[in-house]
Amino acid sequence: MSTWQTRGAGSTRRSVLGRTSGPLFVAPFMVVFALFLVVPLVWGLWMSFTNSSLTGRGDSTFAGFGNYAEALTDAKMWETIGHTVLFTVMSTVPLVAFALVMALLVHAGLPGQWLWRLAFFAPYLLTSAVIWQVGLLLFQTDSGMLNTFLNAIGLDGVGWLVEERYAMWSVVLITVWWTVGFNFLLYLAALQSVPDQLYEAAAIDGAGAWRRLWSITIPQLHRTTALITVLQVLASLKVFDQIFLLTKGGPDGSTRPVLEYIFDTGFTGYRLGYAAAMSYIFFALLLILSIGQLKFFSRKEA
View: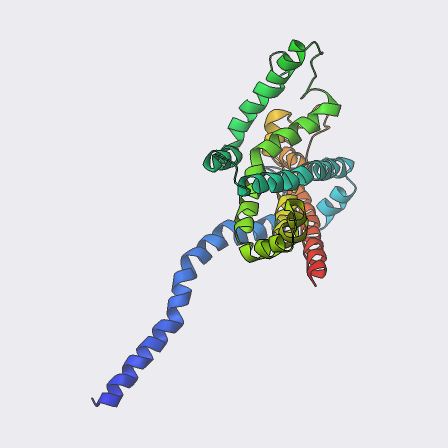
């Protein structure tokens, strides 16, 4: 075989390897993605058009749009969606604002930065079961830390988890403490990417600390703020475990989120088909909200 033939064969092999190596590398991910996301999505969509039951008994025939029609007129579903939206509004604002303030304080050079970073981020690593125990220690009516403190200063205790006017606030409070560390970390990373030359030029022009904050830092963080807001809204709309563990949706259903209602319908009421239909209605609402948020922030950047 001549030299040019050998070089040609080698080039052909490299070309073939280059075309096949990419799909081979992503193949394991695609298999897992298909098994644990695509297949459940398609199966759930099919189930929403049937009268499937968790017991596997009874009528599992094709129901058409019957489950969707029932869900759209289900007052409990819309009531629990209202609770979910209320929780999202009450939790998103402090989770974004507190995270920004905490990141600014740490970035400003507080003594013992590693301790502040650990203290702010560590709760995010806890499981929901631990958060439940912490919530009970704080909010128990008879022996909780908050009521013990109130009694010590001469005030009456509060039914943090058993009174409607306090229950949602209690869940929001424990959620903010639990999850603010993730947003704090995103803001801290964004602050470290702001060019120092901007602050140096502003200092030369006589800008003080507050002026540099409002004219440089906040505008430089607008992309991060938009990202955190979108992620936080989506995360809050999916609230389930802390409410389920702390209040079980009570008192009198005042904190019951839509995911808990779907869970109860599917696994307590055994109506998997109807629960699947409500899941896809909620999924559609989330999709519309996400697209709206992305268009809103894209328009602001333009």
